[in-house]
Image (cartoon, rainbow, N blue to C red):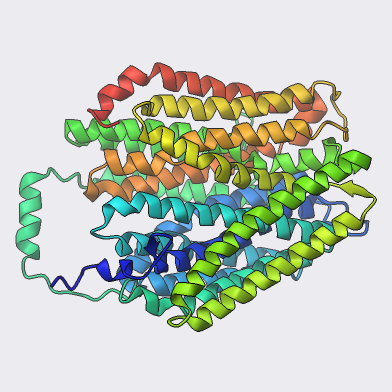
Length: 587
């Protein structure tokens, strides 16, 4: 008998998969609820008018997006540390609990609504995410060892949990924050993060020994195994020049990450110099980029030809990834500002009634489906993890209560003002709708090559911004407000989501296909760094929406995000022969 077998997880199944998968599904759902719920209202709160029924802080868009960009960047970097700690020191399950607790405290801090507690809260969210994020998927991977044929389905289900959480979080935290009060919106995110943590904590027995604190096992064959690896693989050791570049890159990046928000929020000029017209922040950003590119140029050619070529191909994909996220993540920064200031969201008569019915359907139907999944889990596991299920059930009672109250208030109103955050729910909603179609496409004989997928992702993203640029053509330069149709936003979110479905899943997929196992950690770091840079770049550029709009017009701002992604998509298409050659048969 194999003591390491995972077959016992498949004896008690929910919807064809181990019940433990659905414990992770709901834990991840509440974490995404809290993350996207908080993010949906952060920029609107920070840039909101100081006076009014629900006052904001009156920050400039540049300052608010600088803070959001630094937060989003670090959120993608701390998992590299949290994953290492879980692998080597504390175990996956303990890391998840620590991360969830830190994030709960972070959301609670932000609910206080003072600058000090805002920064404390964001810091706790960054560190908490580092512990939480990488270890959920690690538990799934361990649970499905020996059942590789089931993994794709498992990750699809888990991905639905991610989107269900973002959908509910944006909808509820957004509505509560905008209509009742910002503190309540931030606090609601913390409440569900706490409930998610407790639900996971009391369900740990269902995972057996998966995710326990790692034990140090003495391997008598370790020396011979190491010698065998050295005999068959040419190891690429780090040289002095590599370490120098890493140090320069790290210091430059940290200076930029810290100095950018300090200078824009508090007018604190850490270094206060300019070179060739560049500010100190931009100088260190460019220095970090140049040193990292040099590191890749110096290291990658030292691998054997097959590994070298495939790593070059993956590095090219990472470059496209940076620019994709730099445009896509406008959804968290400049797009809410556009929605608030330039979109006609006030509906009356038949239009208001139609929106209320649409809102009812898109709110209740997904929630009813998720509740059915919850009931399926209850039937299989209540005797084993009753307290966990009771906490989870309580969470859903609260959700349904808020949803019914929200619908009641909205249907009582004679006129409807669509919340700014409502449009952000379109992204997870469209993902849930279209992801199965894309999955079937990728699994068919018509599955396009990598460069074509990157072209489609970037081009569709650009087309989405093209709708916004076209819709804003009538807005004159310098305008502070306008009443543009909501249709442009709906079309933009639709095409952005279609682009995301083409490109976003590709990164980790090609990482696993192109990179040898012993180098996955390094290139995983490169990939996450690419996403982190994309997030920071998104809000660094998006922070200039007011400046560009004043000088050149709102349409020009969106035209930038139309032309660049489409141009890069065409470059990806032209690189197809080169990329095919570099990938050496990998599709």
